[in-house]
Length: 419
Image (tube, rainbow, N blue to C red):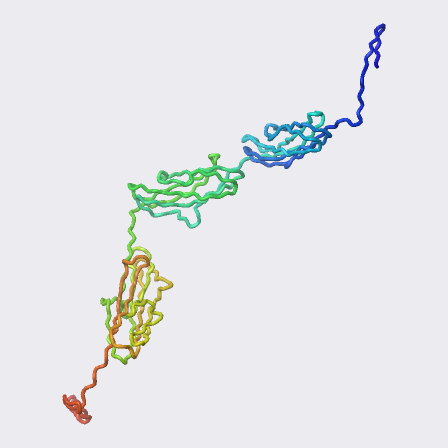
């Protein structure tokens, strides 16, 4: 009981005091991960806040951002309730506006107990804002030409490599300049790339059918989304009357001088029992207007084209055959007007070759152009030897002159020449 007196006035007030052995305590602890963020202006980053109830009773905590720019920070949950000793992780987001200056900013996160607003904790968040940097690499893919010949109404395509070399995602657009700008289209014409990401841009040029002949330039420009950072590449288009590609060959037997023989089919006669080696030179000329890959094929009398295996006639006799050059693995390469004038076909018959005619056919052809085939042939005819003249016993005919008669005849000729 408490008494208060003032002169003759006395006031008595009774107070009740309750004493407990274990009063409620409130407390909170915060953890931030990370506590340092480097960020490009206009971009955002995530961080986490772990809230722990250090009190001995359930409590609710308010989360708030503090520091230079608290408006840059937001939370998935601004209020959390926890049992004593409990903890929870809350996601936070830092969003830096586009107009933020390059600088270091000190922000923070605070948690306040609703049970006792004097119970709180605060953690710092340091932010370095980096200015956005635009940069790119724009170039023709290796091997792509910068100059092409093209005819009116024709189409040409070019592949470019585009890489973002800035420090943030950027959206790039492709545009065109110079005289041929209206002839070109890009796919894609706009693309967004992360830093160091690369893509291929295909530029297709369609020359109008009525385009005047001459040289045209085409500027291809890739521009970052700031509208100022760009790279330009220039293509040159030579518009001319298209030349129709033609393929034509000349194949001929040659004389020792290298000149062509008019004959395209040669015939050779051999008596049985004789061996004859025939070497037949030939020349191939590319009369077309483009480079040509040419094959040479030798067809044997058997119909086979495997001359390396040789030729065996009907009597089982193997002939020696050779074709030079051998184009089975390495085609003959000739530019327009080019010649190969050292070709040779070698045929060596067998001594016991069976009688008959044997045709060897040489074919020259541009690969993929069957209409260009040209042929030469060599026909070897094996004949039976002439029959010996009849003897006296067989009758018929005059007797053979004696050796004495022949000597006398020769002596008379010599005598007349001396006179």
